[in-house]
Length: 400
Image (cartoon, rainbow, N blue to C red):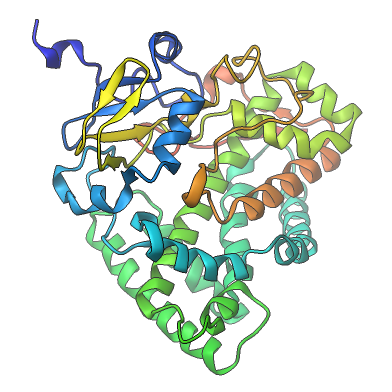
């Protein structure tokens, strides 16, 4: 039997729903990494345990920039490759410099200042759903419009531009990045962004983009390319992810009645519940891009050789029994959840607090406003998207 026949194709099993294939548990028990065949670029090592994922994401012996430089030869989940020079593929001093500017914009205080506005947005969307009446599609009324409206607040997009901005972002996030329509939308988005940056330079406001545009560290400031890559990263990370996570969390709660009852009885549990849901519910179908070893690195009995790629599987790390007792059980009473959903180390998601706040406000308000919320169809009739990087439903019909 050839090596290719014995090396599993990644991702393993059905990734259209929220379950984890038994292969991952068995592979974690066997070792911290396993060999897999990626959809593009050949074979890679898959980091499976909490410790090995942290190492792959934070150890300076691994390089994201080196992975980007491999281009089409890089083992990866998706057909495209991240651009060299993007904040997502920077290492070392370059990444530290850009991160320093981002930290000034994404402070906890600034995110908390957005909470009342996000609450207004969620209340307005739920008002529209209530006016429509039961049943309704939670995706159409809440999950789809919410992320773009929040991103507009974060970037300081003028109200008059928001309808066009939403059309652009939804086309870009349609998942068809190779289509002419999506590429045209990306070009238009970058053109709009350049104009918005110029406006913020001339008349800065209180938004995150104004802070990024006007922040100066000595003689240094962010370049136009860096600003564009940050905005795209915010769009990609904040749109599709929040959209689907709101739906996946709601579906999980509505199909786990004992845990849902905890939240109804103790609404103050919502922040802790969000952390446990972030651990328990897989977001991506797999690790999209890898990181390249700059020297030999030991993982248990395996040596990852210099030049080889390691892909981090966050969902697997979040089910590591060595870190989380009964890891396959959703337990909203679980405290101090050290999940890796937002990554670890230098590339820890800068928008993590914004995502948390969105989820806390949305879930808390949804369950308070609709205490009898339930699925409008049997769970097995909910349709799931297939062949996508971020797991999610085609629609989520709910009743109350």
